[in-house]
Length: 115
Length: 111
Image 1 (tube, rainbow over the protein chains, first blue to last red):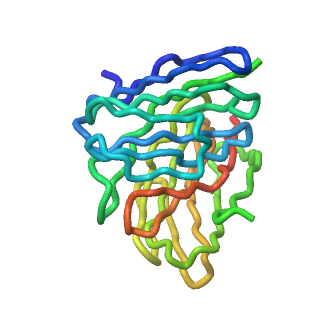
Image 2: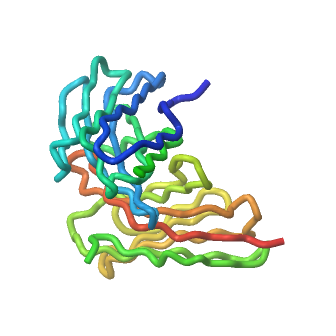
Image 3: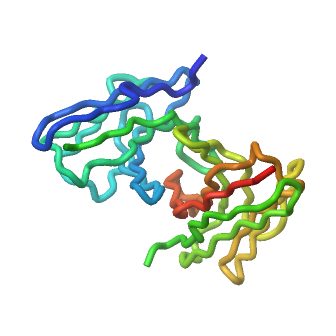
């Protein structure tokens, strides 16, 4: 049973296109995240939702729009894709977002390549 | 300059060696420190976490935090080929759950 699953695993597309990545977690967690990992393995948070409410919104271009239809799902839509968007995008979830350490569980990533 | 710095490696050691992985950071507000392991083409998985300064041991792994020096370490004893992965340090202030990651150190343990 996959705890945090992302689809698709690979996404190859042309510059200027619009694409979506989906994420689902079956851990019963309240908080979900999107991270971007660049070619040098640097992992940076983009967004976080707690119970469908946006709680972290880092300096990310407006072309990126997260959507959380329910607390088990967090999707990422990207408009007008650019070459610099090529990266691995990870979804993660945690039990909550406050106080003591809440370990984050990661999916296996979506590898986005822009041609 | 990034808030958390980590030597990217690669670090290559023979099986059975003791491995030392390190991170330095600049934000003195960080209170929680974590180590994640990431295998190739997989997501990071949490190995250990510590709060404030001190040591924590879990099997072959020991995490060490020196807040006065803004320096954290992960030691791996009796390293195995299965330990070959990228190790990412991460930390946060405790006011929420926004993790700041290091760039990761790639470790290869050879037979």
